[in-house]
Length: 239
Image (cartoon, rainbow, N blue to C red; front, side, top):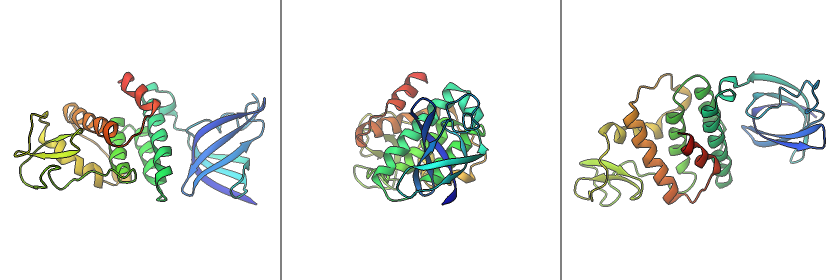
């Protein structure tokens, strides 16, 4: 059955001397597709089946089995990302994280994942977009943030900082010498969680605030998620 599948290539696997298998992340999950002859120099699939290509894949579809590629209509080659080692490192991390999170949920994460990548391709701050996605994913990992009150006493008043080790907001009464962050960082955590990534058109956030939020999330992920991702380590070293 010939079928059109829209998605992003998240993985390439060599198959024999001339072919490869690609994993395409779609609104219906991961689809595995055989690309016959795609590694040959003159193959029309050589350039259209590269990792992180966003397109429409016309395949001879086999449910729960390996489909076979017929043709590709590229929607966005994501050239800016592919030609920038920093942006590529962000996308590698976002992808590895997403692949881990989808193992923990039956919910569809494709739209958030796709929109995050497209925003980064369109010059929005990759750190902010990545942090937004990280916050949204915490619920699926079973360690969602309490964005309403102090993690120690439950008070909604006088929140003065955030702390990754303690797990969220801290009020003045429960403060124990944690790093005091900018008030804007406290406010933006909630915005990051609720914002529709697709609707974001511009971002004006100071480096100080961005770094405070990122440090909080790095610490929180390390302490509460149990995830170890090589792409995250590489990204930390790069930045």
